[in-house]
Length: 438
Image 1 (cartoon, rainbow, N blue to C red):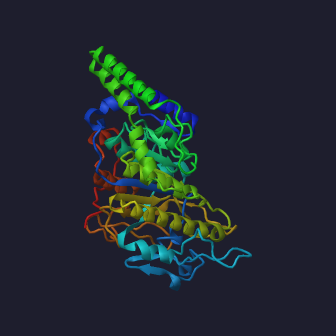
Image 2: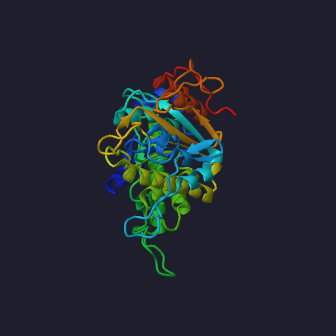
Image 3: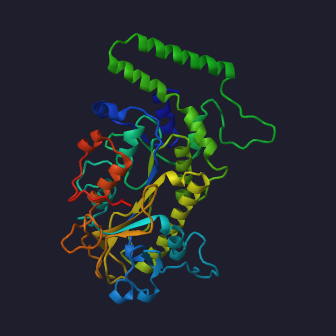
């Protein structure tokens, strides 16, 4: 199966693949070559709609009239404080919803490997602008997501190097973006000669194929012979290189077969959870470098507490599932997660008991090389950003305001984003701050 067939099959089956720009690939030269990747799996989670950090990792309480919970109930796990939300039974139910996680359970479980960044000034309270700034480090158009830059640096020609399940997944041509839909798609692409690769089999039965094994062998030999003839018949290095890339793209079934092998026998019924199961299996198989994913329901302009707080506990449950799956697959020591949102919520309720858009937010980072049990930055009683000392990282009146550019500058260095991409897609932090120093 060559690259054209791969794209056609993927499109027919709902796996959306956006191919990188050939011109951009060639312009970056050495930075775009295929090498074995031994680094972490990077996953970026967006709380779609604009989350309220005061209901999660930057609690305020009723003392400041920002929330309705009591200030004295604010929880603490190590150096991290959090909102005291716990699941409550729905109407006519006697037990709390199973898909929600008490924030005390969440922060007690993960605070030792968690870094919370508070008081991030986005410079906007618009959805698209804030999303772009939060996950690319730049407010104007024309900047790909950090997830795309990382995948484009290390494995731009893997068909599933950058997986997306929502969030900010703009690539600007640096790598193909593969949208996770039906997990059966991977099975079909990985086993192109099997008629029904996902069908359940009775005991003792084997899967039927379109062609006999000797026919498949002849087809593969014909492909190899055609490749050799095309390669030997062209003298231009650019054309020979392109022919080679097209041919090797057709050899990815073996990698995708490994993805299938690493996936759980039964995927979660929850869409977010099944997507991360596929992504972690793909990383373990060497097919994926990074992922962008979203979890929605946070744009609560009305009835904030009744809607937003349960969503926050659902998000905590999903993130806990993510790390449990990483532990199960034995890759949690090789995973880096950034979770944030395109904006925060106002430090007051509106007339409909909702909260509107706010330009200051927080982020949670976890994983390999991220200092745990750490809080950087702070907001005041009205959720306005305080400045930090760029060296000591403490609060300093004449210091620096934390912006997405500062965070992404540190993350780009940590991830080893190529110099070519750094030049093509520059960001402009006020200060070069090492947020992850020990």
